[in-house]
Structures are given as C-alpha cells and as structure tokens.
Image (tube, rainbow, N blue to C red; front, side, top):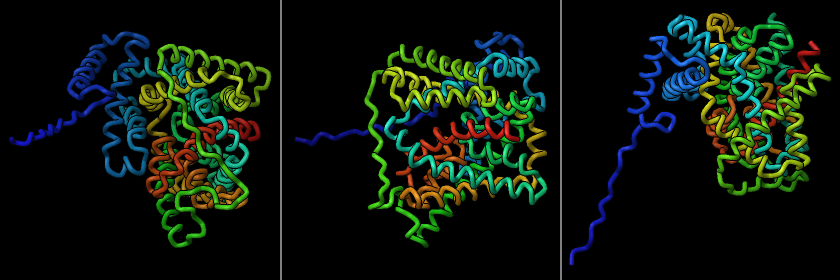
Length: 436
C-alpha cells in the first residue's frame, strides 16, 4: 500500500492596500482620481474622505518601501505629509480639492474628531495599575528626559543665535511630543490658538523637526546598544529594573478578551466627544491651559480613580484603534495639504536647525538616563524607553528604536512614553506658551 503523499500548496500572497487586493484598490483609486479631475467628486465628507484615504494609502505604501526613508525618517508617514504637500504646493491637485480638504480638516472638525479619539482611547487603554505606577516611578524619568532635552536645545538656541524660546517651542517640544498625529498636529493647533499664528506656518516648522528627531533617535538607539556592550553595568540587557532595588513595577496585566460589538464604536465616539467638551468647559474658566490639555488631565483622573466602567473604557480603546488604523493616513494627507507649507519647510532646514534637533535627542538620553539610578532602573533601558521613545514618531518609531537597540522587551514602557509622555508634552506646551 502506497503511503499517501501530502501535497502542500503555497498560495501566492497578493499585495493588499487597506485590506483590499491591489487590483481592486487600483480600480478604486482610478475612479476617485478621475472623478476629482473631472470635477464631479461628491462634495463634503462622502467625496473628500475616500479621496484622502486613497492618496494617503498610496503615498504611505511608497514611503514604507523607500530605502533609508523607511528606516530613519519615519517611512510612510513622512512621505504622505510631504508628498501631499507637494501635490498642493505645485498645484498638481485641482484647486477645489485643496480647498475642500482644508475645510474638512479645519472648520469641518475632522481633526478634533481624530485627536479626541486618540487622547481618550490611548489613555483609557493603558492598564490602570501600570498607569498608577508609571505616574509614581516612571514619570520622573520622562520628566528628566524632557527637562534636559528642552534645557539643552534652549541653551544651544542661544549659542547658535536661533533663540532659546524658538528652539524650545518649535524644535524641542514637537520632537518630544511623540510623533505627528498625537504630537505635532495638536501642538500646531494649540500654538495657533494661543499665539494667534497660522497653524500651517507652525506645522511647517515642526514637521522637519519631528522627522529628523525620529531619524536621530533610531541612530542613538543603536549607539546605546553598543555602549551597553562596552559598559555592562549601565544595562539590564532588556530588563528595565535593577535586581534587588526597592523599586518594583508589576507586570502588565493581560487585557480581558471582549467581543468587538459595533455598539462599542458608538460609545467610544460619544465618550471621546464628551471628554473633549469637558476640556473646553474647564478651559472656559481656566483659559491659561488649552482644552486638549484639560481633556488629558480629566481622562487621566477618571482612569486613575477607576470610576468609568470597564466596558466604556474598552469602547474608547476600540474607537481609538479604529481611528488610528483607518484615519491616520487621512490626517497625514490633511496635515500635508492644510498645515504644511513646503517652501517654509525647506527654508527651515538649516545647519543650526539640524544641530538643535541633535542636541534635543542627546538631552532626552542624558536626562532620562540620569534619573534612572534614583528610581532603581538601568540607565540605558531608561534612556531608550523614557527618552528616545518620547522623541521618536509614536508607535512605528517605538518599534524602530527598540529594534535598533535589540530590546523589544521594553515595548510596554515605550507605549507609556508615547501615550502618557505625549499627553504630558501637550500640557507642558500649554504652560510654556503662557510663560513665554
């Protein structure tokens, strides 16, 4: 009797964009672009949103496959911003598309929808016990990195004749803000509202800082890995806590698996909007701090007190995940068209500017690493998670930094830096703007 032969069929993996097979996505893209240039694109959100999804997805795919750019300069995110900005600056897009996109992002309120979903979901999605412990023990490391980074960039701003205030506000703050969507974008709105400046001008100065900061952070991570091999006493080889120290952080609890009921999206939208409204209410009485910052403080207090039922917290987290997965490219396209002046960006890239970005990264490493010993953490692991993961471009930057340092075990703490640290920067920015 012949033994049965197992036939293994290797299915050819088809390239997908937004979960759609490339051939179908190409048809969709062609229809959207043809409609745009024929000036028959439906007005409002029903036309603009799909077009921005197509543009953003195509540019993101290009950026994530460009050598050097994908590894050091933010990959798809940066290409989407500068690519869409170029399409608008050089009038490749029809004028009415540029106007519709700008309206959609500004007076249309889409950016507020994105930001409030981001803030509420990211903070409520953090394990409560971990958040409580992070505030007590990990927060000083974050603050150490921020203070040193802003202090150093301010000092060099004076030395180089750039100006301490300008260096801190337009280079140091956006770099330490945790990327574009959760950092530079809301910062530009806060700066614009507080200083009576055009957010487009502010964004044009901040964007190259965020991109270069991400690149320098990845390079710095590789250097820290090499330093750890030369000075073993400075590293836990992926472990943050020094053994036998009095400081102890509990492990991250596993999130209970919950069904992804469609009802949760509605709850998430409702609560995110409610928290933003609460921020505006408080801001009406205490206008010294921006409504976004008040929203962050309110969400953190609610989370730490544990007064919100777990289902509602989870709903905000589900909405946050949906927004991040589907709307990030839309926001990046909008940032490129409505908030980024490509000519201003190119004018900002001077020798002084690059030096100031570099010293910001150095400050983040030194400050967080210095505080580490006082809380019982290893300096290199702390500099990586609390320093460089504050200075990179959010989640993708966290992966790039920890991969370069060969310390992916630090991802839970990198997430705290990107979420809690990014929120912290918005609060600090609101306060500094009033002081300056």
